[in-house]
Image (tube, rainbow, N blue to C red):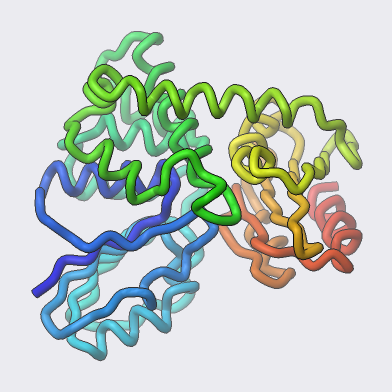
Length: 319
């Protein structure tokens, strides 16, 4: 019997698995990738009796892989907060799936573990830009504002590290970053004892955000803003967290950050207004390779000839 951990390569996926593996230490095969690499279950080589844990990847995008793994005789524990579609009934499939826009996978795992490693859940929620939810579960801990800011920054940096078109774009491969954080029962211990890793994430984040801030919007209204970033590694790394930063700065406005790709397509990152967390997933699913959740969604490769159609649809969705 093998243990296989499959997880999104962003802060939420890594923090969710860190909670679980602190609570239940075991040796497992890790399957992950850049944040947009979500069709991961099909990549697992599965045999009867294997135990799969799948975290923070859309069930809808992994349905075929899940069904194949179940047919092979595996047991699957699936936790996620994205659009799922219909979930099959199977005695070997256990799911905790909630697409509520104020929930993330780290929060769902925290509930499952009854708060045993809640600081990591707080970090994952901050990384998913769920500030209010993060602060709500952190409140019983009595943390100082300085401590909360540290968890928020770590979540943002871990989330930032997951973005890119390939692992070569990233400062740390997500599997490697998980291995670096997994020994620590709290993020505070990680930051203190693995300071070089934290500082590398922090310096990269700050440099890339400064470069993004220098790019003027392609189109901006009172309700929407579209920013197009160049085909550069820094732009691919910063695309998602820069969208979050823009959303926080203007909570009444929807934002779309599009990053040029070498093949003529665009990597798209969409954030609904924080004051109206709806529609981002529906908008992105209108286009090839699009998906996500109501508050935050994306398109992996928007065809160049559909750029204007996307901008028009985006503006219309949030007029």
